[in-house]
Image (cartoon, rainbow, N blue to C red; front, top):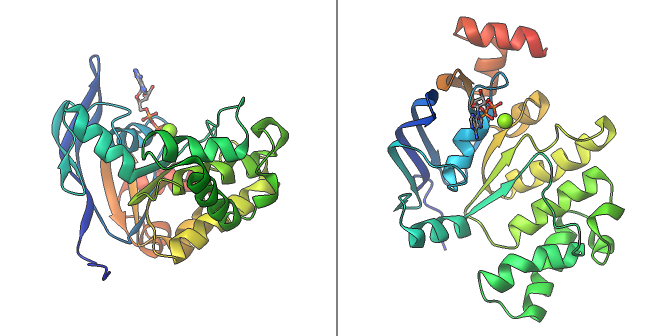
Length: 248
Ligand code: ADP
Ligand code: MG
């Protein structure tokens, strides 16, 4: 199957969202093309998590359109289910089920959402556990693994659903420093294999290695975007310069 590089996987048009009175997303426009890797950065509270959580409807937006692979996100449950199959998400705090083994965590959605028989789901799970370099941990429980290993399980679990796009929300910020690179390395491998990725992260080394674009958010707006070189070396906005001076 040929990849149409111009295929849009996610489209956000003038998206606005409020939490009560608080205007958290302001006219956000974003297009993610197939195979594209985008890094989202910005100060704490700028709306980064809210933006990516809207893409798989963990949060609801009130104005504008969000379209995932041609399916608009509305209150239609069928559309929401459809979109969630296509969108993988990895959170800061892994969110694995503690009472299920690593293998069971990975098989759950393929079996219950995609209706894949257990044996087949297990084979898929093992394939992705190998891909994140921890097949030997399959029968352990999450609590028996290090943070870096748990996050790699979370990545494998998402991949088992064969998503069109992977969303990452600060996947390394809860990890001890020595475990950051084992997770970033897996993400870099995924990027090289052509996965479409939208990553909230302040890991600039990662951004420089894989990002086609860096998006900088502040106070609910996309303030500027550019290549990693453009943004990190020469931010155009005052807010971008201030942000970089604080994280560097
Ligand atoms: P970021 O990920 O950039 O740190 P968030 O998207 O988590 O930002 O949050 C943006 C703003 O929205 C913050 O001021 C936060 O306090 C607020 N916020 C986030 N979630 C909720 C919620 N469920 N209800 C009310 N306010 C929220
Ligand atoms: Mg956040």
